[in-house]
Length: 135
Image (cartoon, rainbow, N blue to C red; front, side, top):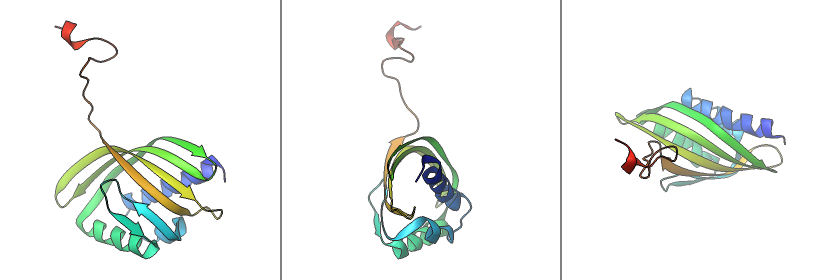
């Protein structure tokens, strides 16, 4: 499948979170999906993913999930993104990467998330300028 087709599936998945549309999950994930979240939990099978989606959306709301870049190798994508949510009354935001594998039918069979802080520090200055020399 082409890059645009697979990337659109990721966009549909992110939109499902933004719009709280659980019905989209069956269209996007294979029954044997293995989904690893960036902070440890792993969901095995579509039924577990659907249960997690419902549980999470009872306690929170995704406010933004924006794709920054996409790399494709065959049926695999690496997607860099920015995520912002409110969960149990607390706002959180971070950068991340998802590694996705698709089957021949275009459904996601594996999704692994990795997280990075969204606010970066520059211990040696910005744009090659050393902070020690700045006044």
